[in-house]
Image (cartoon, rainbow, N blue to C red; front, top):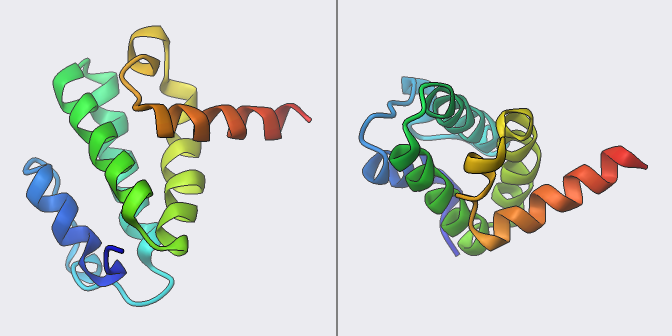
Length: 114
């Protein structure tokens, strides 16, 4: 399992264009959602600017974090990352999602449809 305290560093290594505020460099318990929200904001900017290669990279990093992360990290990806990005996902962006995130998105959409 990936340590929550290193998530911003791990994301930063994989996504060099993304920088985190100093307060998020060593997140304390409960602030992992702020790190993921910053990550989602960056991914959203990449979607809006049609940087598809970078969008795919962000989605792949999110999928790895989701698969290997703690429950807090998984919850943050489900709620902050997918919730923030869901309205931006048109056909070409939606197709870039790894299967695990597609399933999270489907669950999210089913939840709001009830």
